[in-house]
Image (cartoon, rainbow, N blue to C red; front, side):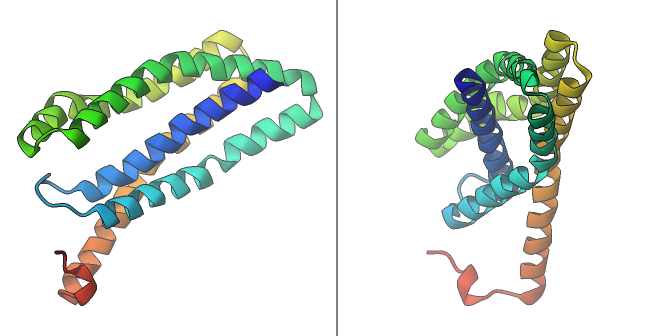
Length: 185
């Protein structure tokens, strides 16, 4: 039971970071010279909350299945562990790239973004699919495979949804004109 909880906690932490980063990417804009930390935090929080909502169906599927058949917890643990084997190396690479992005000068930040963060973002859907495929392959279980696919879909939906929301908010602000709250020091 405790190892299953550790696997679940690790998967939720990775998914949560991914959701927050999806929100951050939506607010980042086109230039690293403009600092808008408050908006970045708000967008990251939006991505995290949206991810939590989108993951509810996967959580309900697992909870109902395990409540009806407690022995199935081991199957879900194996599926989660297979997903972690794919997601952890990718996640660590993203975190290292982000550390560089946050600590480097703005010129090197652009370089880090172009050489690392951009390509890693492009690979994100493939990595998500590889993790779900690893869960399916490892367990050969229809229910665990379905949960992995639902979770993958939730993770991949966050970025376009939070991006559209952020774009709508920006368009609304532009239509209203400058407000006192929009001014930045």
